[in-house]
Image (cartoon, rainbow, N blue to C red; front, side, top):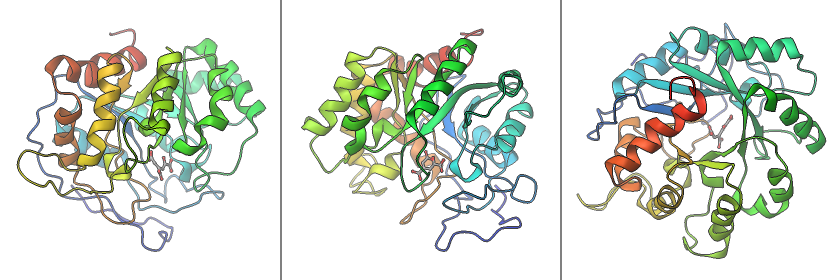
Amino acid sequence: MSKPTTGDFTKTPGWLDWYTGPSKPRFQVPAGAVDAHCHVFGPGAEFPYAPERKYTPCDASKEQLYALRDHLGFARNVVVQATCHGADNRAMVDALVNSNGRARGVATVRRSVTDQELQDMHAAGVRGVRFNFVKRLVDFTPKDELLEIANRIAPLGWHVVIYFEAVDLPELWDFFTALPTTVVVDHMGRPDVSKPVDGPEFELFVKFMRDNPNVWSKVSCPERLSVTGPKALDGEQAAYRDVVPFARRIVEEFPDRVLWGTDWPHPNLKDHMPDDGLLVDFIPHIATTAELQRKLLVDNPMRLYWPEEA
Ligand code: 0GY
């Protein structure tokens, strides 16, 4: 793949560029697999980063994303609006309309969005909005504004993607359970994987999914959650092995409500940048049968993002 550039902006100090030479995964994903969580950044010279952003990334273009898709053996992408673009969805929408129908998107909108803008985004392939509660990434948005947005996008058949840290789930519970749409949680609600998989914190997340059949989870981002890191101990064990029990538990208990994504180009990683091929090789450790793999990578994302073809 080509090298990352910086466009007209200065990257956040210490910013890690995405991995330019991802390995070819040993795990072959099923035909029609969807990378259901990835981003584009800029390029900044064409699609400027938002003034209110909390970080300035390296550029990560649609061409680079689609080259990675092909390299890893995936068929489609779900491009999620990244916080560095705020509520300016142009880079994400541009990626969708230049994907030959092989990408759908998740936008960030404010209360001021017009019905026509929502219709236009729908025509481009947007199928959801993202509500972000991670304080290092975004400023606070009032819950009444978010609920108003959720009620406006519900008739379009869109869903809400929520991003939050595990410790904040109790406080956010009532708001989440009041949402009128399918709700997709990013990265399993960011569990602290140094705590037990059957401890109270993760049990609460499992209960959240169990009690609310409209809640789905992305079992993504082991590289973000792992303490043990990418190094496998021996041939038998996965990279990011401390995340395996958490993701596997969710896949096995909720096989019809899980999604997987690379999270390319991996914003805000401080210690290491993952080899995307290695991330794909993580999948059979958390979805251990061909049936679970097909649901995770094909059936579920198709039902949510391309229901007309599912
Ligand atoms: C992710 C995670 C992060 C960032 C964003 O939109 C974003 O800036 O999502 C993060 O820093 O944890 O899903 O890409």
